[in-house]
Image (tube, rainbow, N blue to C red; front, top):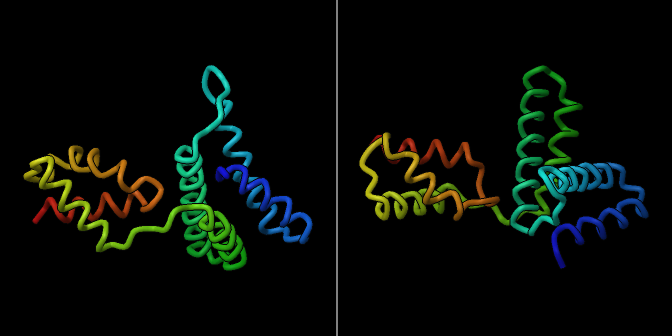
Length: 150
């Protein structure tokens, strides 16, 4: 069963259970997936990897919005954004730990022959397919910078 089909089934269950948070969040995610499918010259069906990319983007939006609301002193809105992020996270692959990411970075540096900060693009290019949907890009970028500046 694809992720999109699972989302639709879970939406039906959330509606039946009158869970407004889950149903609203899944509707929003399905809308984002549909928008991605119809963007461009011709409509297409997204693969599970592409759906994970959309889900990751939506989860990042929730994280950033939650932080912004916290900074603005709106704890109620921040809590809502965090809760939506948790619903989305259920459909994402398990996130990599910092140690796992560092090991992948070390392997990528060795395989690309990167020597310094100017080679960051090579390392990010090598590691990006491995971490897609499994780690936040800004965290990976920061860890790559640290590794290349040593």
